[in-house]
Image 1: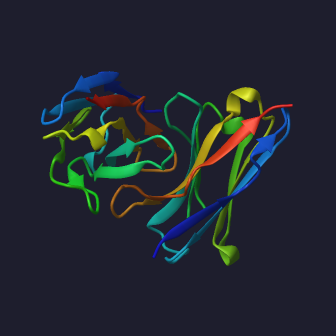
Image 2: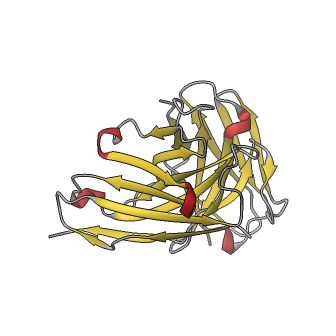
Length: 111
Length: 120
C-alpha cells in the first residue's frame, strides 16, 4: 500500500504570499493519478489539481501542481484569505489492488 | 448534471452494522471509466479512503479496514452501498461518497457530508 506524506503540517502565511506544499509517496506513483484537494470545514473536498498538474474545472491559475516519481508539489500564489483550508494530496494505484490513499493534509492559515 | 446523494443513519450503536447508500445520477452508470468510493473523516483528523467499486464490479478496500467493509452496487438503481460491521465510537466521523473518473484521474464529484455518530 502506497503511503503519502505531506509537509509541512501547518503553514501560516499572509495574503499575497506564496504557499508551497509537498507530497511524498513511499514508492513511485503514476503522475496521471496524483491529485490535490482543498477542504474547508462543513464542505465536501474540492478538486484542485489532477494528473499532477492539470487544474480542475473552475480552479484559478493561482493554483499549480508539479512533480514526478515520488515527489509532488502544490503551489498557491498570491494567497487570499479564502485559501485558508486543509490541502490533501491523493493517489490511485492504477488497479484495484493498488487502491487509493490520501495524505495527512497540510493546514494553510492565511491571516 | 452529475449529482450524488447519500442516505443512511446518523446514529449507530457500538457493535452494530452501518449501511450507507450513495445514489449517482447524471451519467452512465455502466461507464467503465468511472467508479465510486467511500471516504471518511473522523473529527479533527485527515481524510481516509475506505473502499471503491469500479462499474465493472471490481472492488478495492482499505487494507486496515478490509475485514469490516463490503461495497456493492445496484446498477438498476444507480446506487453504491457500503456496509461496515462492528461499529465502534472511533468510527464516528463524516462519511463521503465520491465519484472517481479514470479519464481525469481524480474524485471529481462528492456528496454533501453525512456525520455518523457511534454511541450507545
